Amino acid sequence: MENLGESHMQQKKGRRLILFPLPFQGHINPMLQLANILYSKGFSITIIHTKFNSPNPSNYPHFTFCSIQDGLSETEASTTDFVALISVLHVKCAAPFQDCLAKLLSNAEEKEEEPIACLITDASWFFTHDVAESLKLPRIVLRSLSVSSSLVYAALPVLSQKGYFPIQDSHDLEAPVPELPPLRMKDIPVIETLYQETLHQFAAEAINQMKASSGCIWNSVQELEQDSLAKFHREFPIPSFPIGPFHKYYPASASSLLSQDRICISRLDKQAPKSVIYVSFGSIAAIDETKFLEVAWGLANSKVPFLWVVRPGLVRGAEWIELLPRGFLEMLDGRGHIVKWAPQQEVLAHPATGAFWTHCGWNSTLESMCEGVPMICQPCHGEQMVIARYVSDVWKVGLHLERKLERGEVERAIRRVMVDAEGREMRNRAEILKEKLDLCTKQGSSSYQSLENLISYILSY
Ligand code: UDP
Image (tube, rainbow, N blue to C red; front, side):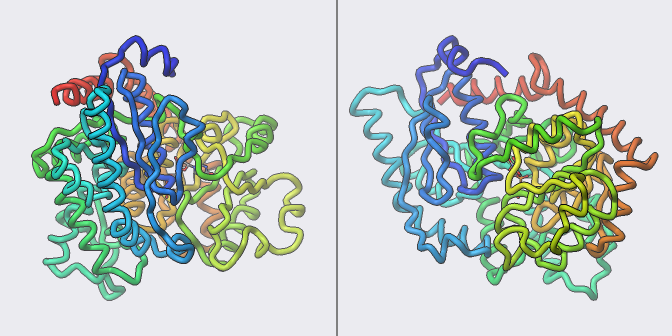
């Protein structure tokens, strides 16, 4: 990782970029990492952000921050229906965003500041297309999913026309989906929401506005998703820039919305190499009490040391871990450690970490692959189903927990990955993949070249 400020000064471009992240952890991290990457390449950066889940500007003194009113009520902000929340954000943010962007553009002109080259928005903020067009500003999108899962979302309207939805138990869930190999019926993204219709409209709109954008940036890697990228180029006639993995340039810790418990690192320091299983289901997923207890007992019965992130809000109806049986952690005699939020990248890079039981969010998956850590995949919703299938069947660096979440199943899965020969083979493949990914951002490699292409493309405006 290079010195940001020094690199910025040496490569100063005299152009400003405006970035607008979707206000969720898995989207904020890659957008702010991208901002750092582009800053280090000499661009000045302005971040427009909502008040809801606002990043902390003091962690980025080199950027300019503009906060817009999202007008969310407390009830709206605390809903667990992700689709309802995004839907409200789209309605409430459109006008404030337009005002803010128009002001930034006119200020830059009036004060003869460096010109604004383009807007980079999360691909899910599709209303920004019309705003950018009305202000004659090029709009590039950041897609913070894997390319393969984006293609699956793009295929949903066709699947819908063919009668795939709603997916019901009467369908053969193990059957392959001929339109989307290697997916099976059960891997087609589902999101629990009261607003299924809105969800499908959103997916279609985000895809349309992505097609209409000036280009697409991926936190992904040519070597990892060659076939999907080729398919994307056939279906989307826009320039595309796979420049990941972003965290190879700059870590995500500065954009963490929750404070990271660092004590877990000193506890890992005391553990044997590759002996600990790290468990985290990301920033949004929620599970019910029964599943929570099956996870807990599965971990306990495996006899493998664990570090488990139980984010407040992970367990529906609970504050934190009060639903664990009394004396649960004491019974483990120091073998189990639970935190509210961890410095995940450091945990995955730690020599004591032997495997990652993950929900297969794209950031978590990339972070794990970059450290050569094999995974147990427990997708919770949406594109996580697709990513899990790729981890287990395409990249073969993880085991997919496909059956009912039950303590015996969990215990067996942990032992298969941490102890058995099968796990050793998986770890070997994960190591080879890590070496490949290590090279991707180095000079002359695919992501490095894509980043150079992106910079020239932006400068061509
Ligand atoms: N993360 C973290 N600490 C934790 C759990 C997660 O810093 O205890 C970070 C993780 O490194 C990743 C992001 O939160 O960058 C989660 O994004 P992901 O796409 O994996 O899942 P999401 O939260 O969007 O479901």
